Length: 262
Image (cartoon, rainbow, N blue to C red; front, side):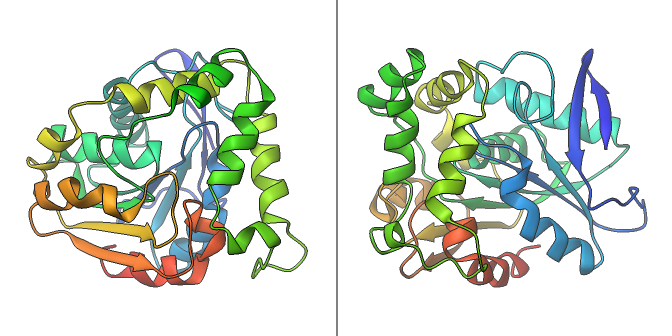
């Protein structure tokens, strides 16, 4: 589905279905340098279970036009604009990594519009190493390499995808490679600069789920303690053996966990 938001083309994957106002809606937000395709399995699953599903390409990502946005707050405002354009009153948000910060900001700033959030591969603050920032700013392929290597648990570096014929590492690397110049840097800088996360987390009133990878090396479980304490009564699901790229490392376990809040 193509929309116009703030004068720019926006692509939303909806499983080839029109939005039905009588159904609950779930909106999926991808992480840094990615696009809507990381949520294809989850989108199809929840569409089959009676939901409107909307998996967005953030500005400047995938099939969406316009420049990448500079801050998590601006991205959250944009998500609400997408919801408005779709004529959806209330939505559940599922976000991965950068997308989880956007979902958190939306829930805190627009509580009447967000009925639940699921934060996948998350933490706050979400600092980014100087090595990744410098490489991303220079459009150096090393940024893609580092994020791909650290984004998977050590065991999944050797494969083991439950979906036959799909190479997890290669597919993720290709997603980064096809991103537009400068997009990954804008995303990484936005993650690094978002300092309001814990304060905003304390304002969240909707049901909240954190899905964490036990072997995540980018947003380790131990780094989420402050976020867990800031959010009122969150559900926490730690997936054994999974790293940061939970959608492909532990897709079925992630779907089971998402049902508890969606």
